[in-house]
Image 1: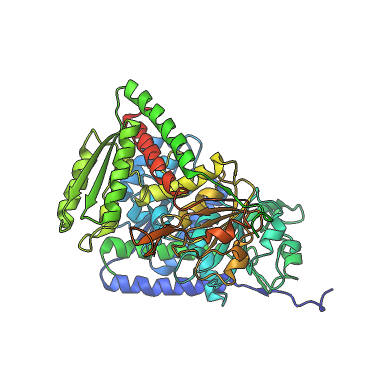
Image 2: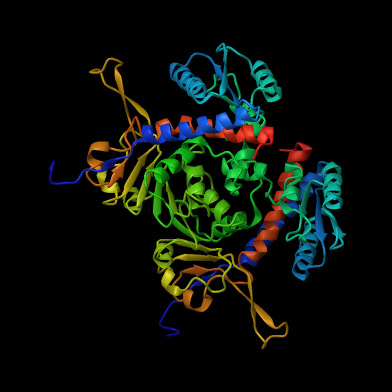
Length: 301
Length: 301
C-alpha cells in the first residue's frame, strides 16, 4: 500500500508551541517594562512521578519565558487544612499572578474544595466554576482551559480554521471534550464550527465521527479511533496520552494516543502525533493564561 | 394530503408544567412543615409590557405553589447604583431564597454587573457565571437554566428520553442552545444524547438538522425550520416565541415559533405547539429552582 496512498501531513505541535512561547516571552518583556513580573505558583502534593515531571516542565517553561515561578512541594500526607492554607497564602501573595494545584491529589484531599478556593483571578487552569462559566458565556477575557485552547491554536496556526467546518469530538470530559465543544461552537475567532460531541453512549460511533471535517479524539482509550471512523481527508487531532506496556523499551512502556496513528494517517489529510502534537500546547497555553492573569490583576490591558 | 399522512402527536407543555407545579407545591408543603417558606423576589425595571406580563405570571405561579413572592417595581430611569442596592438588600434578606432581575434592562443599566452581583445561592435564573460553570461541570446541585431544563423535562415526561439519541439544536445562545447542548450531552438522567449544535454559520443547515432524532429550534427566527430540515419521525421541540404582525387578530399580531408548524407536523412524529409547548415549562422550572435555592440556603437536603 505504501506509496500508493498519500500519507497525512503531520501537524507539528512543538513548532506551534514554540511560536506561542516566543510571543509570551515578548509579552513578558512588555509587562516587565511596565514594572510587573508575571509570577506563577505550582503546588505539588506528594511524589507522583508523572506529576513531578509536569511540574518541572511548567517551571522550566516559565523560566524560559521570563515568568517568575515558584514550586511548592508538599508531603503526600498533607492535610486538607494545610493545603487550603497554602492556597490562601498564594491568593494573597502579590508576587503571584497565577497558580495551580497539580492534579491528581492524594485521597485525603477533597479536590473540589481546593479548586473552588483558588482566587478565580489567579486560576490559570480555568477549572474554577466561575471561570468555566465565563468561558461558557463567551467572555473574551475568560481563561481558556489549556488543552481545549491548545487544540484551537494548533488548528488555527496550522491552517485549519474550524469556522464553517463540521467537527466531531469523542469524549465528554470536563477538561477537554465539553469545553472544547463550547469554544469551537462560539461566535468568535477559532470558533463558528458545527460541533457534534460524541461519547461512549453514542450508537454507531464510527459513522458519527466520520461526519467530521475535523475529528478530535479525547476519550482516554489507546488507539480507540480507527481508520473507519475517519472521513477521508479529515484533520485528526489526538488529545490522548496513554501508557501502553512495551517490554521492548527501556522504560517498559510507550506513549500512544487515542487514535490508531498508522492506519488513520492513511485516510486523514493531517494528523497530530503523540507525543509532539497537542501535548506541547498545554504548557504554552498555561503560560498564555499567566499573561492574562497578570494583565487582569495589574490592570494592564 | 390530509388523511393520507399521519400527523405528529402534539406534546402538551401545559400538562407537563402542571405536573411539575403540583410536585413543587408538595415540596413547598414539606419545606413549610420544616419551618421554611420559600421566597422569590422578582425585580422589574421599567414598564416593558411583555416583561410585566412575565413578572405577573411568575408571581401568580409562586402564589399557587405556596411560595412567598415579592415583586419590586422600579421606574425606568433607575440608576445602576440604585438597582445594585436593591440586589444587595435582597441578597441579605432572610425571607428571600431566590431572586431574579427581569431582562431586558434599560440601556443605562449594565446587565452583566447586575447578573454577577446576585448571590449565586439565590440566582434561580442560573445566569451567574458561577452557576453556569457548576452546570457545565455536571454538578448535580447546580441550578439548571429554566428553558433548557424545561426542554429536558418535556422530553422525559412525554416519553422521549434523549439517551442514546442524536439531537440537533439550531441556535447557540447563552440562554438556550449552549447550555442545552451541554445538559443533553452529560452522563446523567435526561442526558447521554449525541448532540450537534448548529447555528447561522452552519453550511447546509437543513441536512445537518435532519440528522436529529430529536430537533430543537432555538434560533429566534419565525418558522425557520421547514419540513425539509426534519428527519421523518423526529421529535421536534420549538423554543421560539416570535411576534408576527397579523392585522386580522385583535392584538394585531400572533405568536409563532421557530418551526413551520403545519408542514413540519406532517413529517415529525411529535411536536411542541407555540404557545403551549416549551413556554409553560420555563415558569415551572423557575419554581423548581426556588426549591433548590431554599433547600441550599436552609440546609435541608
